[in-house]
Amino acid sequence: MTTEPFCKRLPLRQLLQVCPYPLEPVHVPDPDQIVEIESYVHRPGLLLAGFPPTDRTERHVLVFGREDFLFLQRHTPEQQSRWLDVMWACHPPMVIVGRDANMTSGFLDGARRHGVAVFRSEWTSRAILALGFRWLERLTAPWHRIPGNLLSIFGVGVLIVGDSGIGKSEATLDLLVRGHVLIADDAVDVACFQDGTVIGRTPEASRGLVEIRGLGILDVRHLFGLLSVRDETAIDLVVRLIDAVREPLRERLDREIREFVLPHGGATLPLIELPVVSGRNIATLIEAAVRWFLLRRQGIQAGLDLIRLTDRLAMNRSAYGQPSESQGSHRSDSDMSQRSSG
Image (cartoon, rainbow, N blue to C red; front, side):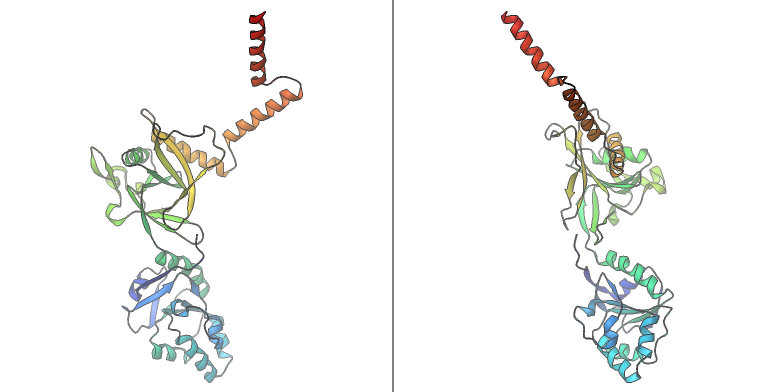
């Protein structure tokens, strides 16, 4: 997980198309202008006081609110013009003015001189700042395509991975029959956000489709209804299907959940490995794995409870001078050897 802002170059028109709140153009020199933006939304801050920028201000989407213009109005028009020129000279990609703000008379003069786009919003500046971060982060975050199937099972985003031909799509089809939701089959586009969230979405070409050997391409919407398909979901768990013959499980009672490292970005997700053998119902095992994962989140661990119970029983036996099962079997073997020698 990175703490540095994401950056991207794109046309201003595309930036407006994906904006979650409507913007009214006040001054737009060229809607097809290529701008470079980062994933943070900024207040003008000290730029309004003439403080020179210390970072890449030309990539900052600036939001003006009521307090910013009240600060300017406390100073002479000459000071306002001089300080605003410092900000406009940084060439921010766009400036948004909230509905709670009243623009000063000379505010747009510098925008016209430097060719900076200015928009007015029906939302308040605080609401713009609250939604703006996620909006720009989703727009600028790098997306990577990885192999696997992604479903929503009991409200948990589950990424199913494994070798080709091991049965991921067949298990996906069985899970769809049970009422779960498909996001992507065979390939998933994944992005890791700065708050640790991992989002998976379906590629445009394969949206709502599943490929089954022997049947071909199936349209999930027509087979199971519109509610059986979703465009994206947060990924909470990774289930890896493994060949039980080639890769036998190392432990029967796992104390810790393993980690799955995404190939791009280095983010990690909880991992459960399920062996695939003839006669096992993989869909049922995946459902059980998701329920088990949810119980682990609540602190319920049946395997660990069993280990603690056996340890407690062994301690109680030793405290009362009773041999444990291993000690009893050892003594019975020695008694048998003495009897046979006698």
